[in-house]
Every structure is written in structure tokens, then in C-alpha cells.
Image (cartoon, rainbow, N blue to C red):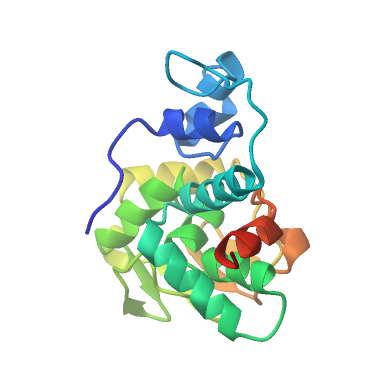
Length: 207
């Protein structure tokens, strides 16, 4: 599967906000967004006023990079959201939050979504007692996500669970000692801290 392998801090600088792609570094003073708030490249910030299309594009790119999703897959998520009942933008963010790699990250079993994706792909995670190694797997209400028995002594996973530096969102319940969490319900929009205006994404795809 194709994936972005370049420097991720450039992505945060390009969008002008922290996308929390680098784990602990994003919470420190070493974060490039704090040190250099201008976009990457020799020309820095543009003096031209962005067009309506450019604003919509940047919002879509911001959401896509925040969750680590490639272009074609993001389009499929939007198509899924547009076919469901409810506000399309909110349903889109709710769908992205349901990704297994995002849930593993939200539960504190990984320092970033990239690390969570690697943990899932390396078969360290199970859902309802069954091994799942697909990061894009969409969890449902009532699902139990846990670190597999054979992986519970994994040094990195134990370190992250013991640290518990992030607040677990209200739609999830986590037992850090058992390395297990439950999806209590699907998230509401006010429980999703993704720094995007989803309506602009809807307008981008509605052109």
C-alpha cells in the first residue's frame, strides 16, 4: 500500500496547525510549528489572498493528513458519509474517528496515529477477541479493542499505557492495566478535536 514517507513536520507547517504526527515531539518546544510558523520552502508565506477553492483544499488536506489517509481512500470516506443520514461533514469525521488505528491512538496505546497504524499492522491488536491487522477497520459501538495476550509484554506498548499522558475521549472507556478499551458509543462532533471546518470539505467535493 502506498503511503507518505517524507518528513511529517513539513505537513504540519504547511497546514499551519499541529497535526500531532510526531508523537511526544508535538507536545514539546521542539515542535517546528512552534519554532517556525511559516509554510516550508524558500518563499515562506504567500502574500496573496487565498481563493475560496484554496481554502477548501487546505481544509481537506488538513483532515486527510491528520488521520493519515491517502487521497482516494479519503474520497471513499466522503462518499460513504454522503450516503448516510445526518450532516455529511460530521458523519465524515465520525467515520474517520472509527478507524482502528485512530481508536488505538485515542486509547493511549500509541504516541501517534502512525505508530498506532504500525502496531495494528504488526498484529498486536484484537477486536472482540479476534486479531485485526487492518488499520482502516471501522469499529462499532460496543466493540472491545485490546492488546493481544502475546503482545502485552511489548516494551513500547507498556510504556505508553503506563504514561497515560492524553485524556481519553468520553466515547471510549479504557483499562490501562488490562490494555483494553471499549467503544461506548460513536463520537459526537463536540467530542472530536480535529482542527478542521468540515463544511469546507463538503463544499470542496460539492463543486
